[in-house]
Amino acid sequence: MIGLLTMGIVHTVTDASKSFSDWVLSVGKLWIPNAQGIGPYSGKEIFLLIGWLLSWAVLHLLLRKRDLKLAAPVVVFVVGMALATLLIYTPFIDLILSK
Amino acid sequence: MDLVAVSGKVLMGTALLSSICSKVCEMTHESSEGSIENKLGRADPSPLVAIVTWVAVTLFLVLVALLTAPLNLLFGGNQLAVIGGVHGLLATLGVLAGTVAAYLGYRLFTGKLRAFSDLKILSVVSTFIAAATIIFGNWIYIAYRAPGGPRTFFLENSPEIHEIFFEFKEFIALFPLPLAVATTYIIWRYGDRLIEDKSLRTWVGIVIAVAWGGLMIAYVLGAGITKLRSV
Image: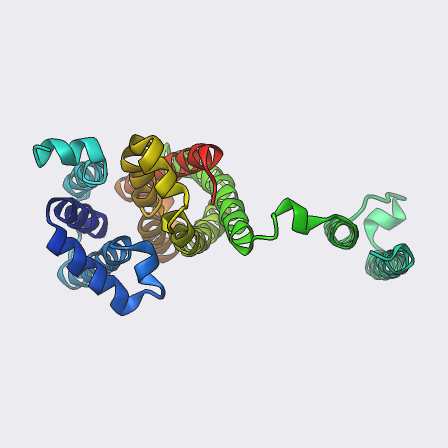
């Protein structure tokens, strides 16, 4: 969820700023073959991967010894996924960017 | 194509098919000699015979099709169409595997799942299909964005198709992969204990449902957009 949310935030900011979008594309070019062909989408995939793998590692270190009740994390997950979905939906992005 | 050459290859295929079938029949005969079923006079085909026969017949039919059908006309001589075809095929397989996994996930959610081993296998299969579909999707996306491609067409004629539907589709298609990896990890890490742990199986059921939702939205939008303008 954190990786997808990261991607949604990056996507929204690229929509707001051309220079940030160019920088995201340059990040994509570092890792993905033919990134120029798919544009800033390549960089957004990289941010998804970074957010996902980093959150997995951090949460593993934080929670591995704990017996956690899952009610709250389930709610956080569902709300986070809904937010990540909205942040890739153009009419919602236009709304928050007042376009 | 030379008809004589094709006929020769088809005959070779037929001979190969025949030899495979006879070998399987021999193996089955050897393995079932002295069995209770044999003594009782039953002659049901074993799963091995059924599967090998099905595979052999399918391969034979594929061979005939490859040798005789003008596939280059179907794909229009375009390599990108082949990549797009593989992407679509993988997406379809993903929908099939994902839908069965979603049903098993629902059974797990309600605490009525008995086919846990099926869910274990399907979670892995779904994860690999999701990854492969994304890789081929990235590949075909280059053609979509290329000058004169579908993106240009939509932006000139109906920009909402690209800006709302395609943009949403390209991102929502990424949702199933991390969710599938997470559920696969939990299912394999906790194994049968998952069935007894209500809160954990509830979480897995919800994640599978969310992943399936993303998968279906991406599939339907992909099919709809391809119908309007393909690469």
